[in-house]
Image (cartoon, rainbow, N blue to C red):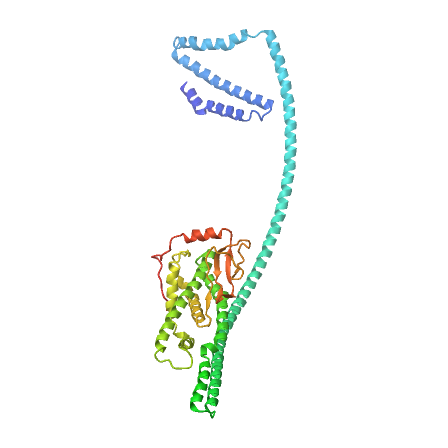
Amino acid sequence: MADTLRRLVNSSPYGVLQDKLEAWYKDYHVFSCDQNLNRCCELVELTSKIQGQLFTILNLTAQEGGHYSGVDTLKSRLLPWLGSCFTIAASSVSSDTSLSLIQESMEKDRKIRELSSAHESDLQKIEDRLCSTRIELDTVKQELADTQIELDSTKNKSATTLLATEDEILHLKSELRVAQDQVDLYKRKLDVLDDYERQVRILRDEISFLTAEKTVLQERLVRSRSPSPLPRRSRSVSPVRGESPTRAQLTSSSRHARLVSRFSDLYATERLESQSLLRRYIDDLETVQRILFIAVVESFQAAKLAYRQFKSRVRKTLSSTHIGPESLEDAVVDYIVRNLDLYDVQTSVNDVINAMNVNPRISFPPEVDFVLISSFIREACRIGFAMQTLDPPLDLAFSSDGELYSDVKYRRSFDSEFTAPLVAYHVWPALLEGDAVILKGEAVTRRGALWRSRSRSSSPVRSGSPSRTFVSFY
């Protein structure tokens, strides 16, 4: 009995029965009626085999117990179970019920056959669709292969074109370097030519002055050789001496034209260079233009102050030793015109930078210093200082943010609102000779300019950041 039980345990028939039941349950709706019946019969056969082995074990166990051992268990459990499975089931079914069950079974078999045929027809249709889909898939694969071939050919052509383009780019870069070298050479030659032209203008002014002085001296010589008496000669000479022009008076018109031209060049060239330099550190164009405008205004203010101080020192020096036909003021101006190089422009540049550092209308990053535009400020100071030697002197027009736009003094920038009546901020100041406008400035007009100017002016005064270092390069 133990060997039979061991073989039953090792074969694991109930595990096999469970696996077959799960597999049948998964494929129940896929199989046909015959296939499901075959599976059921197979499971019944397997169950009967297991029951046969269990009955064998039951017989062997009863034999090992003797004639009377196990009788109570068989009577209380096995016999009632056998009676309920066979006797009661057989007595509860009549002959009419058996016929109706047979008819129902036949009807179910007929429906099963119809469903099977319908299932087979649907399956055939699905297979036909699958075949057509496979044919279409093969067509798409062929088209994809053709497209891949075309793509490969296009890639090859693009690679060839790219190589040719790279060669052209290298060639153009080399030509560009050569052109840049030539441009640098031409710029150096142009700078030398500008120096020559400046020297020529200075020499021409010297020649005109010397010519005028020569004429005056010749007239004096002719008058001195006249046969008139000495007292009368002295009276006739004095008007001539009073009418003799100074160097400043002789070169006033040429200096006026030259200074106006330098002011225009400052706007057209140096301003744009300084603007490009500041744009490397500041993204806001309005802030950059405000900085340059304030730099020009402060430069002229510093230059006028330096001119008054310089003129006062020269007047004090010449007042004790002045002897000549011209007045003291003319002599002072003539001395300043002859010695413009004595102007301490670096002091004015430092004053301008210090004034800009506390200007509340400039918003500037702390890592950038106004020394970056010191060359621009220096040129503006020199022009402003030289303009004070003219008669009448040239000056900048007064301007303020939010003022009423004037076509006489300004022209609008390209990004202005041309219907706005107020000035948002100024790009370049207007140049005045007395009350007449010689050169127009540039302004930006926008709606709400008055409110913008009030909000900007109400901001606190910006002081120098501790991280900034004011370095003088001179």
